[in-house]
Image 1 (tube, rainbow, N blue to C red):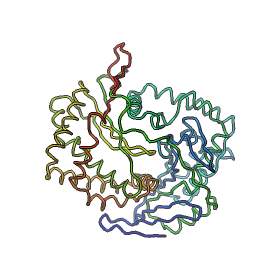
Image 2 (cartoon, rainbow, N blue to C red):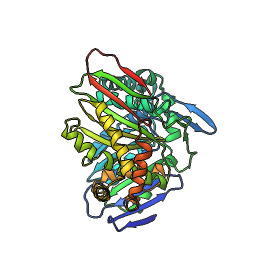
Image 3 (spheres, one colour):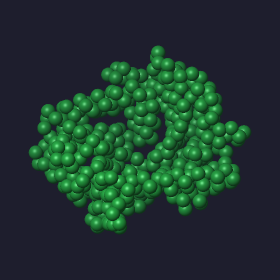
Image 4 (cartoon, one colour):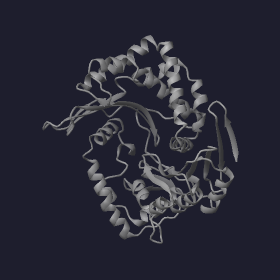
Length: 432
């Protein structure tokens, strides 16, 4: 296996691509008593249309999430979740817009648990009866989500930003879309996306990398299948489809999300873009920024506040969220601060402090085995190595952050969704 030392962060990474296409990433943690394993497919809720064998295939919204639910069922009637738990593991799974990931953490029986993880994820078993039963379960999950202000706010913002990209639709789908899912649909999507060539295995713990490779070769199919290609539709404009969306729900105070689109890169350029985006946003709207501290002092922002640049399924999205009695004033203050930074630049001392804080946050993340494995998996699908981030961050300069703010945080590029306390008012959309 290819071994790379990272002396700056005290880590060592073993990587290999097996003949069947599986990408393995292992971070040994000698002396630690805990293990974490993540087995992920480059397949999420946004991959509703894909090309395989020269044919374009369309699937209903929610298939990736539905498939995740059903994969724990085994042909002999057992349930992988139950078996892993009985064997001392803490298993679970998630589906995002870009990825489906099955994982477990344990302190004992690691190899047995790993074999079971690889076995059940690569062994599809569906019947029309069990699919129909799951449709009812997931339908209830979808209906419960409709009462969530946070979920409504998030998808309202994506609806403002994206005209047709499937990321604007809920990962779980709708009650109507999941009713179209059959056992055949699940088998076809499993065959297309759960082949080793479209997956990665990421492990952190006191393990022997060669032993992990041997187990993967024993448990997984040997043939190398064709790599599916998700089709997210034509490239969209960087401009939003509308400027604002207001809706009333049962909340105690208005909550908002302000966002804008980015054109995502691939490979090493993607890592650089993500580092610059994160650092630029920390400088512009972070908890120690003049923007946040000024609005917090005025009572326009609370501690219920967050920001990120999210890159998933061929999209890049800036999201700034929080609670405010006057979201429009927050939106205006954001644009004013971006203009000020564009004119005056970023204070060099503030830049160095923010960069050191970013180093610290990434170093703390290396203490979390779960974070290491998720980061490695997501980076693998974007074409770079997550452990390269510390060295790459060293090269990010102030000018790059200033360009990011000047080009992306502008009135014509940004949109805002708001959920206000329920007052018999109908949702309002203001055209851009």
